[in-house]
Length: 384
Image (cartoon, rainbow, N blue to C red; front, top):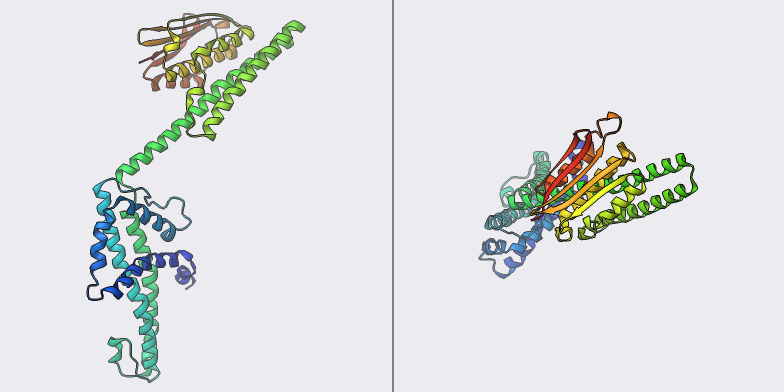
């Protein structure tokens, strides 16, 4: 019994009832103006539903009254973009009006029927309900008094559920809107992945340099070397903070351009950081690097950063050969270092996968792995 009456204690039941009553307010006004033509409101709704903005208002009402408190109720709050959406809006308005008429009739006539049955059961003649006026007063009619109230309960709860189901079907997002939402969600996921890569590359590089420098300074026992190591740690840490600020800026400002991210024009900063960590870097940068498009140059910078980080992390202070150049429509990048003690090099972790994914997203390719006793990173990125 408690479960049966539970809908009467929910606020949603009454907000849905209010939603069904709203169109009847307009109908009530019209019945005072032209009661001989009660069908006019239904005719007027047809062209009204073709207005794209009407779908916005109907979706907002449905969210507010049919599913209050639900984060994603499945109603579209965008203007109708296609004729299909407009026709769905017209059908929705007509069905909402029809359900409103049924609701008003139920809420008015069913309580009156219960009162009429009560009067007849009390032995009095009753008026107001033409169908029941024909009955003779009798005490057994008291058994029928709850029937209209039960029907009213079913009408109030059932019609609210019916209008909610219809709203989800007719005011729900169209195929084009679902595709746009899917694309937006994909963009957000790609942005999160990019942020994860940015943090992995920039912060991982800085921490690797700091660890290598600190270990070398402790082992050297030379005040001069220690001073240089601390200076390198300071510079690397400052650069990492700048990179972290850029990444956090993406989180704080979704519309912020990515042009502030470092490019290959700042590659010297990475090379000097690696040299300060003890690596013997032989670098050659050729071609018009300044003309490389921003997205390509930024991803090239990150690939170079990850490659140098892997050298310092897995090989230590070893000779490193860096070649970066533009030949035709391709930006070529190569980083190689000897594999000490015959070790196989870094495992295929997120950093190596990230380099290959960065290149693939730009339509290029990247390869990593041992080659003739060296660990080699090669990347080719199209610049047009």
